[in-house]
Image 1 (cartoon, rainbow, N blue to C red):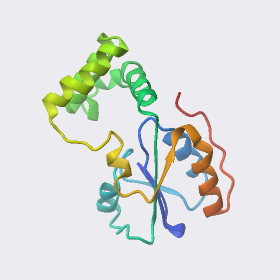
Image 2: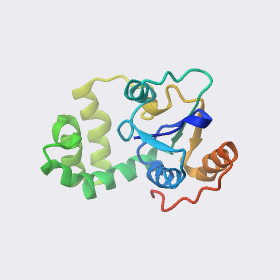
Image 3: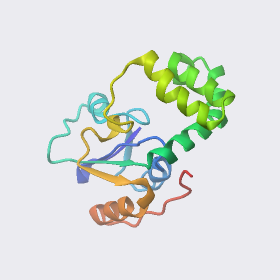
Image 4: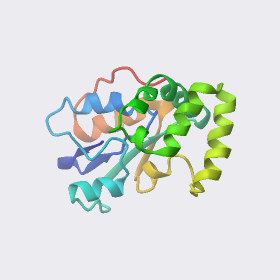
Length: 172
């Protein structure tokens, strides 16, 4: 889901593997923050879900992560957390053939072989053109923060909303 601070015209897009759950937990503890749409939705998807037109008066905030570290984290998440979704018929990971293949590969391959599978084999199956892996969450962003400098996004938000945020554990 995305986090919306409508009074401040701020939309925070949750990019997978960038500590967005820790930020979500901190923000949802304040009264004027609310979650909207599904987790990891794009700006366009949030707009369709909420009916809000995110024009130039809005701050669309997102984050990105060092790509190699993101792939290591994704490989670990797939084989430890999301593997169980293969047994849940309601899960996105159960319904999406390419994601199922990615999870099975994460469980069966070492990191190097899995990365080769994801970057070459899955790409050849899907043929989606992407400018970058984070494109979906950065396409309409007005502010993009680096995961490795998580304090920058927190400080920015604290200044904008005037409240101190306490982040819990972030992804490694």
